[in-house]
Length: 251
Image (cartoon, rainbow, N blue to C red; front, side, top):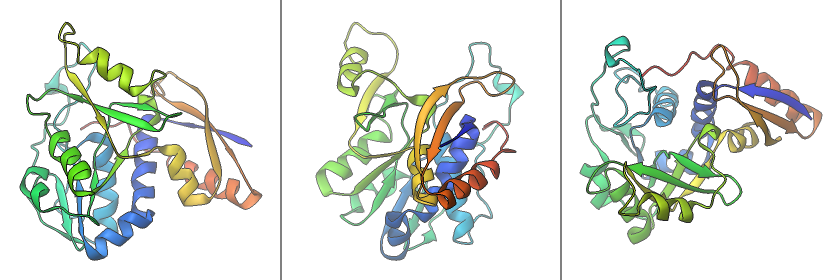
């Protein structure tokens, strides 16, 4: 086994690269509708998929989110400002610019795919949930309705820095208690996809979480162990080293 450090930004890029190669994504780009709901991790996913389909021009991760978590003393004027132009909706691989999940949710059917980010992931149970600050559940509402009501495939690209140890149903019950202040929380009935899954998909190696944390820009990083055949571990090492210069996420 070899050990590696992944910063949150490296992890987001890794997930994006793996999504391009995911069989479900490759298939839906040929035959159905793919909806990438705006979010910081999904910004990397959208960037990689649009680049792979030759449609990267006109897309920017800056502003591709509806809500963010920032430090208590964060000054919005200190970062890049961007305007959300829509989620990324691809119909048979063609990007329909300006569309959102709200525009297309009702026409999604079995065989289509929605990618929705999360704020909490329990790795053992492979369950995720999103914080909700909108009275009608925001983008999670139509995504969950499509997944449950019409069998649309819901996938949840989420970074390991969002891991929690408690069962998601318990957290949801606590957060949504009427006596609790702050945003609500909605469980996402979809397929969790983390950096560990990305390494497995792209290299065939097995990856596991060993530790976390860091300083000098490595805050929120994860320490992972990668095992497998020599060629698989070598491929994983090459892949992870290719991400080393990924700058912190500033969107």
